[in-house]
Amino acid sequence: MTRQNTDIVIAGGGIAGLSAAAALGAAGFRVMLVSPDVPVTRGGDAAADLRSTAFLQPARALYERIGLWDRVAGQATPLEVLRIVDAHVTPEGGDPQVRDSREFHAGEIAETAGGPFGWNLLNWQVLGGLMDLLEGMDNVTLRFGTSVTGMVRRDAQAIVRLADGSSVTARLVIGADGRDSAVREAAGIGHDLTRYGQKSLAFVATHEVPHGNASTEIYVQGGPFTTVPLPDLEGKPASAIVWMNPGPETVRLAGLPEAEFNAAMRARACDWLGAMELASRRAMFPIIGLKAQALTAQRVALVAEAAHVLPPIGAQGLNTSLNDIVALVAALEGAPDPGAPEVLDRYAAARARDIGLRVQAIDLFNRVTRSGAPGLQALRLAGLRGLYGLAPLRRAVMRAGLAPVTGDPAQAVRRD
Image 1: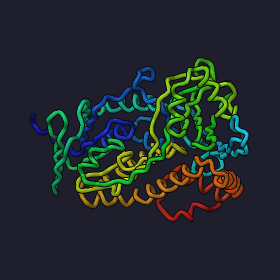
Image 2: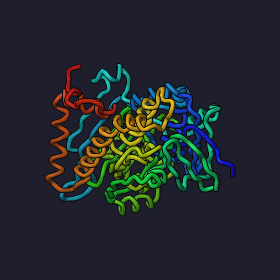
Image 3: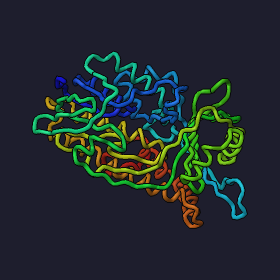
Image 4: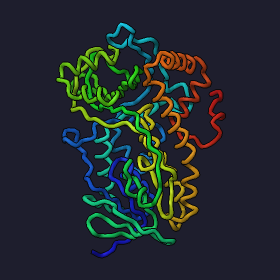
């Protein structure tokens, strides 16, 4: 086959890869995206991604700049309150019981400008909006049904070999191809992997009590039960749910008959939303932690899950990935050569510290909150109360969750 030529090759057709293609296409680069699978953009399809993402303020700013937000805003639900609930199972057993709860309101910090922390969307809805946007960009080529199998990197360019036998020459190759990234492997970048022994169920549920535009994380040993607000479904309040447990328990829950699952879901939610009913299929995902040992190599940049994987806590996963894309676009701005060493150095310098801090923080948080040890459960409760009771610290944590860390973290603890 004839070798094609472009400015940038992006491997990966998920939300991160498509977002990178749209952002770099909007910046004027010629972009080719390759992915083995066509994104699923209808919720009823068997392969649809039923997870949701609370797109925080910086993510919305990115999507407004590239013209995506107007395409998806009508499906978004504002996230105005973050509620943390600490629960435990008594020595006698039975259903989890609430010990304490705290609410974090977006209006407490100036960064939200009086608006919500973010807006929740189902992942398949975002994929649909991105596909519509990219189909109208003449400088972006989408090649589905193939993937990266190898790469030869030189001073001025990289030659990317694809599974269909063709090859592409580009000045920059972006790995957005997930936790098993072929681009990361071809570039010789190692990674550190953590297996937690947990799996999550992701699904949509309707419930009796309205969510009030609040996301609730209910912590019990094994992992959090997280509800994120969605628009009403057939006249009933609805939320996207992520339910983390040790792997065998998740498998058991996934196989329960629907009526039994609904009862288990209500009990695990500590009756916070009243009666609950499953409103979609149950999708299961392994929980791991991953951090690439470098973000760049010659002619290569890693973003999203090729660079880092976080447990689904605090809306950090995909938002951290989109922060990568914002930083990469900024590093490329005005650069005649998008893969030049100085460009890649700017990107790595902008993202390495923030990624490292988030990987460490979420790892520690998951280890503490999933534990059934009485001492760690007591620490979890004391930490919640202490964090909430100190207003400057509470606001600093909200700011850190909302935007990437770029300066001295101590500067975040200030008066509004």
